[in-house]
Length: 211
Image (cartoon, rainbow, N blue to C red; front, side, top):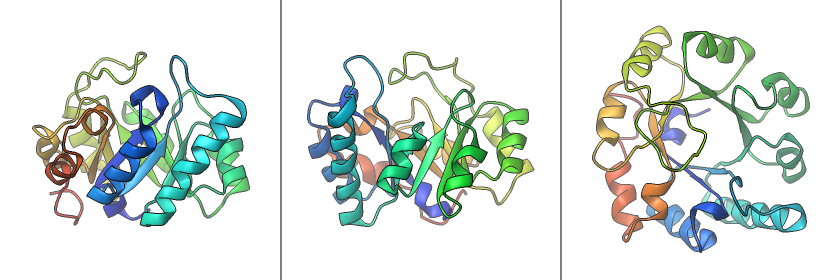
């Protein structure tokens, strides 16, 4: 995993926007560096509609040369030949996906030192640490963790790819990077933006990893 690919990591599904494909293409044009397909929540797509939407998102990502990551669905990730998968602590095991897709990206959500160590040992390519701040995009999100664990994880794993997630916006993205993140993972700040190009520009770092 190229650490620069985590610079502006956008996550989205139909629950996050009335025009998700329009939002995604604008975000890609604005310079996001990675996209995670996360179709969860009330009224989310299922069956053929779910797969068709995923394929449409993947097509756009390929058009702009941006990695397409599937959230928590090993079968879909393999079927679409996605660039990778992102799993949580309650989701599919890293080893399950790696057994079928040795060359794919695997990301893991971590919340403490034990989970961080396990992800690294299990062969994850990057971790998502959070929620850093209060978030409204995930109804079952854990309480905000702040920047303390992020700083500690960076100190313990100086070269490992880390993206911060949860309540991140244009105003606090820089302090997340300063705490050790290679990039910021966002949902609502892009989905609700009136000027996606400007929003992405403000979220971007220098492209050289954490400062």
